[in-house]
Image 1 (tube, rainbow, N blue to C red):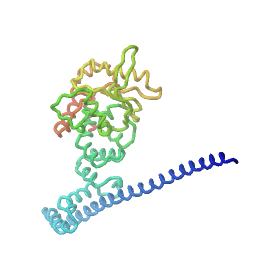
Image 2 (image 1 turned 45 degrees about the vertical axis):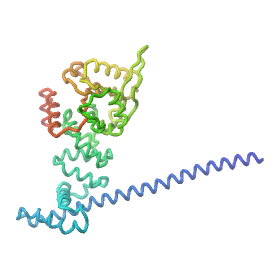
Image 3 (image 1 turned 180 degrees about the vertical axis):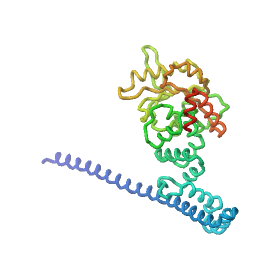
Image 4 (image 1 turned 180 degrees about the horizontal axis):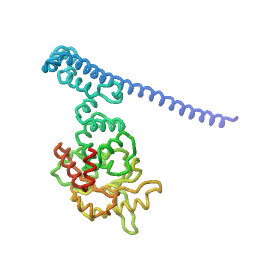
Length: 359
């Protein structure tokens, strides 16, 4: 072996050594990061267990004095006075009352989820409706929602918005992963809430401004859109002979297994808007969609809409085009109930009876 061949061999061995060392260091880092993450999760769940055990012990003690109605309040106040100075504000009267409610809501310790932190359970125990609470529990678990994300979804009335076009049974089945969504209405909400953009509701916006704000806040927008969405393109160019058009936003939904085109309109939706979106959907179905994929869905994200206009601008069997009103602020409970009632009013008498029966 001459000098040059020896040099090349050593050089090759050095590259292999670098690759091996890099892989080794990466694996070591992963071990450390995973261990630290698990340690934090373990500490968080120990806090959950502490409050559960406190709630259990408080309730047992309280029940022994159940003949006196005021005993429960006295017990908590006296306990807080004794232990809060020693252990801190996490053991105030309010926190102890919450621990008691926690045990009442989740009396079976094996039902507690190790993935949840105390901040998430604090939100869940304030939901009185057991079906609604289970929905948020399942969605938080499967989508790895943080406490802040769970709070946002509860405050935005996600569950109620889905009920405007679905019955409770189907919403829970999808949340439990008992079946894959078949209808776009099982995932796509109306209205869509964009309060995370921090735009003032009294201001007028151009469509490109709203689109830019959505792209800037893409992670929050994907959370609002729901399960299975991934971003594909912005201002997707569609060439039709000598004319070119641009679809505002294109996503793909892996659960529905189809493209989802979103057109943004900062005015009340018109039949021309619907026709434009229908053209984009037809293009994607004929030029982009693979044979094994489902038909493309189009969503008109609009400032306002006329449900009758949308209905009669589309075929009776339409399942591909829908209009969803956007809101720049979180609705009140009254507004959510109004939306739910409006959803019922849009159904025919037979559909309304079936939905009310299942609620």
